[in-house]
Length: 51
Figure (tube, rainbow, N blue to C red):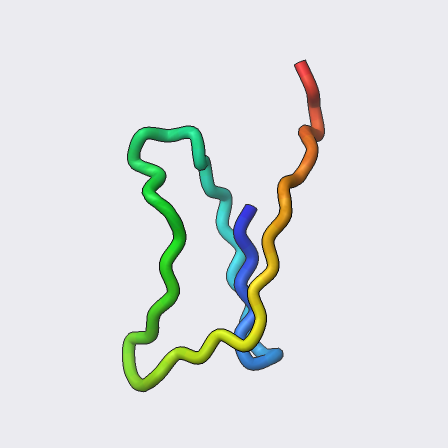
């Protein structure tokens, strides 16, 4: 899961699949103006249904 919170107003959540061949990474950008990243956190989640 990838969750992005912007300006304490907007949240976007997306399922991502890092084991796919086309999973090349994560990038940050802006359509207009400047994007400033003030905080970035990441961690590995455990499986919810281990096989």
